[in-house]
Image (spheres, rainbow, N blue to C red):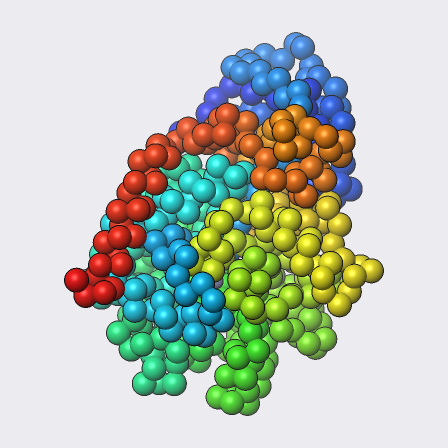
Length: 466
Ligand code: ZN
């Protein structure tokens, strides 16, 4: 059994103090100046003022003056491989964009998947993400162990990780959107997904690697793959993830092919419940919102991608009011080239205020909650991550807010959410430093930049048939 054990659990106590703190606990407790004590991989205490002076075994003391400490950001939806196809089909909507990109995606191999995952993870980690999801659904024949490559990359960078093992089995000849050469068979997809769970899924409290069952979307997957995928996930006790209700075209596709909208269709295949989260959910009617709330189905809100592809504005405040778990997602970097979660905090707030419900639009605190605790809840990990509270895992970020971009904003949460992307002075994942002074500690950013450039060029050459 392979486990993400590249980074041993740290020992001793790390003290962070003299910083503002937004705990994102149930009461949104904040401290203008406070401390966090980390012991090993666990948060031991959080409170106002400096840490107690008589603590034993302190291996490091961080002066957080001019900083804000928050829980690490949680990215609930992404497609890492797209790091190699950024900036293409820049003026297309979803279906045309997919059709333009499938041929290139069908050429990826293990080396590309590994490089792209490192690029995606490095960008996110440097911007304060401590937990990430990769929804990977392109598995060309003979491409090598793509799932293993992505999981290895997350372990190398030290980011807490869920691989949503995706799949597509509805090619063009079955009425689907992807070309036939880009899809697996039903049996291949199910067998490979089960093998990935058996090899890599770790259900423990401090798990660094989890697997979810994640057929891609209603227009690229057979009903049978959805149905049997749901059965597999429940038999194995893992979560279920897919795309849903992203565009009006998808709505039309589902009505024409299945005689119902995406939510009813997915429900008919067993795809609602507390163990399910769906990306986008832009085109939800009142009944869809009600059934998501009643079943506890979660939503990965991806405002930048939805804007980039002209998909629309999700009803996030209605979802929150109804009690639906909502987190944020970068989505793939072919539809959100920035590839960082800070942009999503900001854009979730801005887009919400452009929607039809301006009076109840998102607040800055809600935006931060979506990107932290909300994401943890969507991934079913809110008992262990998502807020700064004693007993939780030490996933935290210290944002530098005393520089040019933020120093004139008195409210640190407003500075973080509304200001430019704040430099990360320190991020801990499972108690381990992943970023220090704005640079990755676990990998060489320049080497990653070079290898992703080289692999993107190699993919472009293969796609052109050179
Ligand atoms: Zn997506």
